[in-house]
Amino acid sequence: MAKFETQVGIIGAGPAGLMLSHLLHQHGIASIVLEARQRTYCEERVRAGVLEHTSVEMLRNAGVSERLEREGLRHEGIELGLRGQLHRIPFVELTGKAVTVYGQQEVVKDLIARRLSDGGDLRFECGEVSLHDLRGSRPWIGVERQGNVDVIACDYIAGCDGFHGVSRSSFPQEALTVYDRTYPFAWLGILADAAPSREELVYMHHERGFALYSMRSPRITRLYLQCKPDEDIAEWSDDRIWSELHARLECLDGWQPTEGKILQKGVTGMRSFVVEPLQFGRLFLAGDAAHIVPPTGAKGMNLAIADVHYLAEGLRARYRENDCTKLDAYSATCLRRIWEAQRFSWWMTSLLHLFADASPFDCRRQMAELEYVVSSRAAATTLAENYVGLPLH
Ligand code: APR
Ligand code: PHB
Image (cartoon, rainbow, N blue to C red; front, top):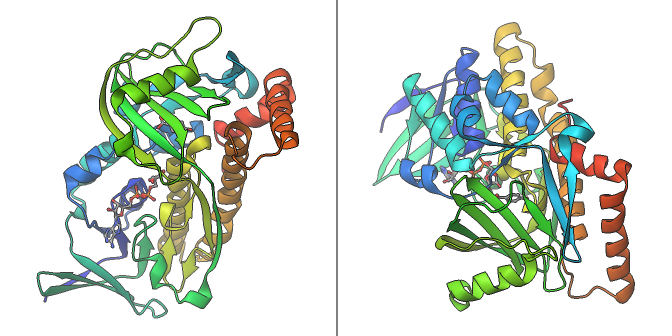
């Protein structure tokens, strides 16, 4: 058994855990990051890809935006498709702000490289983590690996271990309220070796189901199809995927996605999920450990970054000025932004997907709402200001 000491123990090396560790380091606060998976797994897993203006600013202020600013694709709007026609929502014109397309695994790579060059303590393939004495002044983390148990004594623990991690389940059940909503569909996503044939993302409403045209780089396209929640990926040959993408995305003006070798495919479930509060004793939840949004609003990675911004600010005030006000307000401060993003993600999802149980009234209402969004500057601005990211409170 080995014993370690640190100020903040961080569970999980996703965007939340890594960014927190980096921000704390900049504030002179020590941390140890414990990650169950291998470094290459964290760096290669294909996940989200859109950074809000607000997130880019946070990464820039933290001095980790160099590659992102060089390689990220600045998008000044998106296109909404209905009845085979595309309508642009011009973010910069409506809000003065843009978003940046840059894969989550690229953010993860940049943060890992930076933590390691700053001498950070990142422990990949750490073993089985358990959390103890959360209500005391010196909580500790047990890390068991091949029968050997390490003990890490901390002042605070940050649960950044995603939806399936141990942190949230370390809260006593009665200390948490769960708000959950599932959707009667999922997304089948592919990564294709094809140069994007459109400059901006296309969110397409279609009678066969929603489709999204996105990208990762000037050579790689990312595309999604609304599918059944229990869709069996084995039933989707590459030909079937392309033929469905063409059926849903092709426009009256002749635009269609360019095909390429499918590099990766998978099915992503859709849910809205929040727990309250985000704090129990000295344990704080951040990112997917505390909330999940359906991907339609592109908010997942952005919320994770915003959470740890607030957590780092709270811990800085606590260590620098012995002022716990911000740390005590962490849960309430984050939840305000989380619910704004939940509402927006739910709304984008409801606006664009085909609902199997929709009545003829519901279908007409949905179409009227889409027509309103693409024809009213006020409605388009509402979408735009949420998509580029609301200002921090
Ligand atoms: N012990 C140690 N590490 C763990 C454990 C555990 N018991 N359980 C999970 N982890 C690790 C996972 O392997 C993962 O690397 O925690 C990390 C959590 O990272 P993410 O799932 O990326 O979560 P987060 O950092 O909150 O980022 C949220 O991820 O799902 C996307 O759309 C979402 O973009 C959003 C982002
Ligand atoms: C993606 O590129 O993976 C992506 C983009 C926009 C979304 C969701 C996912 O709304």
